Image 1: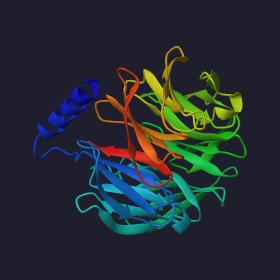
Image 2 (image 1 turned 60 degrees about the vertical axis):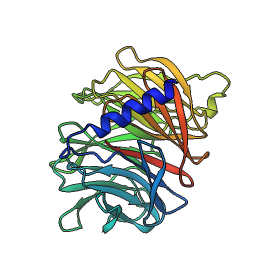
Image 3 (image 1 turned 135 degrees about the horizontal axis):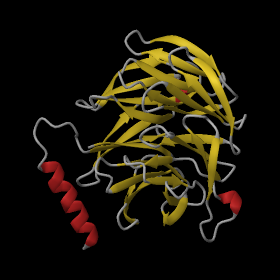
Image 4 (image 1 turned 180 degrees about the horizontal axis):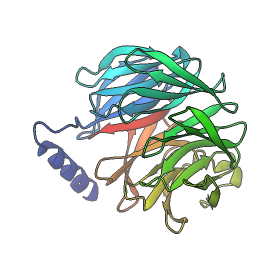
Length: 324
């Protein structure tokens, strides 16, 4: 009864949205081994379409006006741009060798892309589809995240166990911060005052001071029944008010729910195998988790912290984006 009530409410809210409102209700899931993005209808959770992309699609972001979805195709060395109205790739942007993650400038003019094999970040002019700059960073960069004001770019180096802080005006590194082993991805408080960094092999999150770039704290995870080396945090997302963080624990098959103010784990939610990417829907009532080794996504009710359902998608899902 609880599941039917939640989904009926979601469907009613979507149906009642003004005709001019943005938001198709589509859920997009990149599938590394299928070279495609699976499109789900969040009203029914049925597959609408599988959109072919370049090889090994991974990170994804919506454009500011939500008319386009940018998709990293790592083995094709490009970003594919999907026209959401047509559900097909409209064009591609070369972004350098072995791109993995990226962020999109708030003005929609630039992509900031980590190039893992070249140990650099490429800054791409979207209008010209040409590189504006390349910034050398530590080996195997992955996570890329702009500060809320757009003045700082944070990049993780998996091999150097480091976070690089880059000034977006000068495109120069002005701080290097050592964190736990194999840092991966970021979340930030709304004012940029805290930067949370997952460390896959360190089994923790490092909390950085956004003003001083100093380590403020760490958050460790101990889900029951798992050895320490099974706890491999990668994905992280934070509520808009900055009060709650959700951290995917990889091979530990759980999502940790963390109170940001106290940095205490409030709960662990069992999801699928190798929980990886995670995103919240617009009203933050649902958390969608990509499970890389069970080829599905888990739909989690953030109020009850229970999985409402698992939805089969393509092989090795990496990132989930919802256009609601």
